[in-house]
Each structure stands twice: as structure tokens, then as C-alpha cells.
Image (cartoon, rainbow over all chains, first blue to last red; front, side):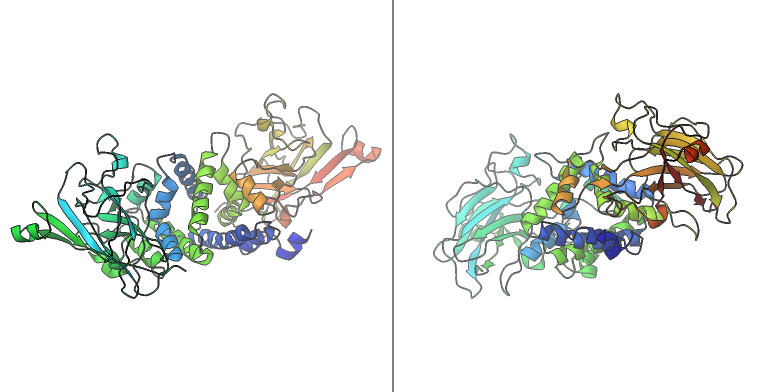
Length: 294
Length: 294
């Protein structure tokens, strides 16, 4: 029985090696590689933590209840990945950008695939609630060339921090969503509403974990973008309001310095008229730089 | 906003530090300590694995389905802990024994609290199925002194590898379970049936994981013991059949060299009569040494 002779018996010292050796004949080589890394870190973590049997059982029950919170509308394990920074780390690993390209951040759970394509300048706020906002900017390549006909898929929470899909029957369908195409100068612009911070769902195991850690569940106000163009890598990102109270403590660690926009209040009649708006509004101007396709 | 200034923005390099710094104000200090260790190892593992977004999502769904397999009769996350060696590691950490004391192993899911107390020599096999077995030995302190009136709670699978609680209506209630007390010489003995190897439940996510890793789900044949006595640490352990086909590849890593018993076939009429048995049987003789209470 070669397993034992090769790897010896399971002890505190040998535990990870014995478990990894057991997987030596795995038909799925990537799975074996992944499980070797997980086993090594899991055993090292247990040795550092030295959990009591009761703590171990509490961890088992935490994971069990996290799975049982999940349904078609709620994914508590993704929330757990989010609040532990794992989602952002996986995003970072899969979206390393060349110098000068705009950075990515997490997609989040509120994107819908079939938002309407709208003419530049359209107002995506269909219920006129909240403070008006004008968003504009350019899509550029890393050498500064404007990208014409780039596709810009935007979505945002409303002035109370809710997405349309969270308030079906309260907000109009496709409220605060739209798909735009840049003009020949690489420009885009549309109207929306100043977004508000909002909590991730915090009535489950992840919310309890955050409470135990003294953390709040809020994400700072932001706009979501997916930007794509032929010959370029698709960019999934947000821009953030740097004046948001939670800008330095996003519950899911999505904020990056390069993703700060400026939400500039425009109040003078002349400036309002110059932008073709009908009253005071917030102006957000932000360019994005796409990396060349690999 | 001190968080940012202290820990900086989230990047691939800083990810674990940023997440750990966020938990600095945790009201539950032990939780923060545990989460710091988990965060450090989790981020290190993700950086080594470099999962694709699809692999990350597969991991999310594996954990979700593992939680959703659990019910009052099935605990798939404990199985996951078992097949990754975590349960045995937690057991080892919580049961470090002084030199000379018998080693522990996992409790397993099949113990029942209210098994009947029986006279020494009783047969716990209530349905006469399988090959008869006589188990005997002594309970000793680390200085070799026999311990009188030690309580020995034993349970075992039958000759087909099933516990009574898995075959309600097929096996008699409390089949192959009993509680015994050592005599004044520290001796115990009882009759049972030669146990057989059996699979852990393998029709869920953990069974699929084992298949992907090229591993079988079997535990080698064993007898379970919980041994307790005033002034000594309670010992939860097994003894194993060293001739079992799975003795070197227990799916849950429960085997230790010191827990090997000998299942000796006794066939001569004289030897059978000397032990007061009525036909051929297996003799298992195993002493246990209890550590002094801390």
C-alpha cells in the first residue's frame, strides 16, 4: 500500500502532506493542483487558529447556513466572497491592465443583459426622482486615440440606493439603465440621477459576520459601466463619488483611486444653459482608457 | 477617513492587509483574530491558484450546493471537513496526549447518547449476523495502573458496513452498541461482530470532489470507543483492522498506527472453549491508556 509508505500517517505535522499525497492519482489535474493549494493553506490556518471543537462546529454551521440562504435571488456565498475581498482579488487577477488603461472593479449582482440602446444624451432616469446628473466623457485607447462606436452599458442605483430590479413595481422597468455608443470623437453623454450609497443584503450570515467584525454593510455611491469596442478588452468598472461617507470603507473593497469621479454641482443659469439642462444638476466628467485586445 | 490612510487602497499586493485592517474595530476579538488568519491564507491561496472567473464561480456553486445538501440527517460540510483532513487536524489539536496515552480519532456521525449499559461479556450483536468477535482489554493510566469502573461506550457497523441508525427497521434498535464498566482489574470484554469497511455518503458534492480527485469514499473497518473515568481525560477513538483493504487510504484520514488492533481468527476447539465461545470467532485484544485530567 504505497500511500502510507510514501506519505506516512496523519499527524499534526504531516497533515497537509498526507492529504495532498492522497490526491496524487486525480484524473482532473487542475482540481488536484487547486486542492493542493487549498489544503496547504487550510491546514496552516487551522494550526494557527487552533479552533476548539465548538469553534470548528460554529464554522461548519456558518457555511451550512450561508449555503441555505442562497436562492434564485440571493447568493450569500458571493456576498461572503465580496466582504472578504476575494471577489475583488479574483477581479484584479483576471483584469491586469497595461499602464494607462482604466482599472476594473466588480460587476456586482444588478446588471441586466437586455437594457435598451439609447441615443446619446438620453435621460435614463425614467421617474424624475432625485437630483439630476449629467455624465460625459470619452473612450480612448492607451495612445490617446478616441474610440468611435464603443458600446457603453451603464446602470446605477437611484437616489435612495435601490436598483430597478430591487423595486419592481415601484421603479419603472429599466429605470437607470441604458446602452450608448460613442460618436466619431469617442464621446459619450447621458443624463441620470445622483446615486446614493446602499447596503449589501445584511439579514443573513454575512450580515452577522460584518456585525461581529464591527463593519457596516454599505457601498459608496457609484455608477456601473461595461465598455466594449472591437479590438479592445472589455472593461467592467464603476466610477465613485469621492464625497460619499463610505468612500473609504466600501463593504466589498471595490474602490480604487483611479475610479474616483467628481460630482460637480452646477447652479449658475449660464452653466446650466450651456449644458442644455433645465435646472441645477451634478456634472460628472470621466474618460475611460481601454487596453488593446490580447 | 483613517482607514485609507492607514491601509491604502486594495490592490493585488495589499489585498489581505486592507481587508484585515477593516476589521480593526471588531467587538468580537477572537472573531477578528480568526478572520485575520483566514483572510491571509485565503488571499494567498487565491494568488497561487489564479482562478478564472469561471473557476471562482464553480467554487461558489460547490459551496452553495454543499450547504444545500445538509439536513437533519446529512451534514455535507462536515464530510468536506473530513475528506480534506480538517476534522482530524482539529481533533489532533484538541487532543494532544502525554507520552504513553492512547491517541484519539474522530467521533463520526453515528454515536448515540443513550445506548444501554450492559454486563461485561454481553453480546452487542442483537441479530446474530456476521462473524462473531470477542473484544477484550484493559483501561490503564499512564503509569500502568488499571482503572476500575471506567466507562466504555462502544459502537460499530455491522458485517455489511451499516450502523443501526442507517438501517432502522432492518437492524434491531441499539444493535452493535453498548456501555460497559471495567472490573476492579481494569478489564473489559464484550462480544460483537467483525465489522466491515463502508463508504461515507458519496452522492453529494463531496462524493463528486472525491471522484474528481481519483479517491474512493471508504473507511476501513473499525470499532468506536468513548472511554471515560474520574480523574482522567475522556478518550474518543477507534481501533482498526490492519488487514482491511482500505487501511492505508481511510477517506477521512482517521487511521493512526497506534490504533491498529489485531483481529485474530480463533478456530481450534480448545481455544474456543477457553474463551467461552460456541464456535470460531475473531479475537480482538486492545488496551487503552488514559491521560490524567488537566
